Amino acid sequence: MQSIIGKTVRGKIDRPIGSFHPRFPDMIYPVNYGYIEGVIAGDGEEQDAYVLGTDKPLDEFQGKVIAVYHRFNDVEDKWIVSLDGSDYSDDEILQLIHFQEQYYEGELVR
Image (tube, rainbow, N blue to C red; front, side):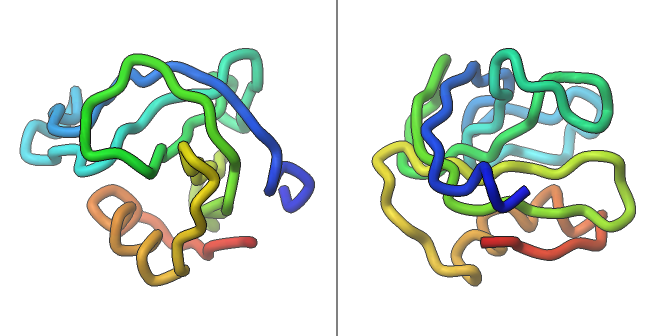
């Protein structure tokens, strides 16, 4: 998990800022959320990522992995990607991803 931190990745956004969760319409995405093309996660799907660094909806992204949210009670982790390589504090990241991660137990890994 820690070996991915600092690497540049690219992917697609399937839930842009302001969009609604497909199964939970009360959940609105405050950050871009997508996946890393060609990297398969523990759930058998492409690796999910929270994409930080813009307040505009995106279709695609390229950025640096600055952290991983490791879920204790799920089969996959979530990568935290910074578009411009800027760092965010642990508290900032946890606040930005809380809308969805509040339903899981986990820790932020750097």
